[in-house]
Image (cartoon, rainbow, N blue to C red; front, side):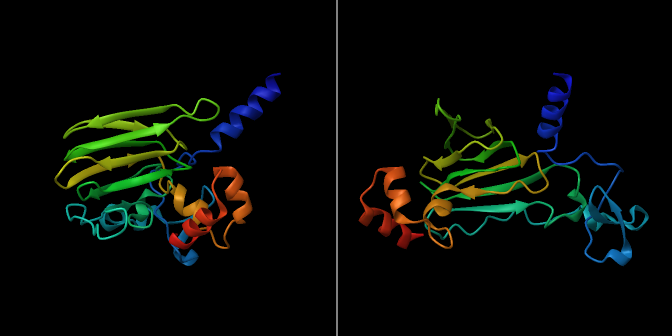
Length: 212
């Protein structure tokens, strides 16, 4: 029983970002200038500088001219190499009136979101078999949490632009946008699968494939 419990505990722990084994581990592509820590090549800590931990531009609105009328500006390990092994990142999200961040999941992170401007309808859906929607209307200064791996969304229900900022508990949270993944995969999922799964006419499935 103890061995089983320890194995389960390890499997749960290993599903998250690894704990750092030193103060910094700035990601680096050239192994000649690196040390090997936590399975990654990292810059020698003696060579780190302020720029390794810095990003500028989160004050600038993102381009929302797209079908969902929103934009996510990401600040993760790709933008700040010093985030490597630190288990955290953030995003800025801009929404036009009635724009949305469509239903999606972050497979590696819990998200905590704060509204800076506007009014958002947000929510997440619990896992099977309950599939319960937990939702809330947020105003400026309100905070909401989306648990790791669960489908969630934000929708600007106001008549003006909205802005939110969010922290995520991974240096690289990943994102799976549900509609894009299901109807826009490459190659496409066989329409017979989606016809039965969504209980739709095959012509509707083919149309959705063409849209994504």
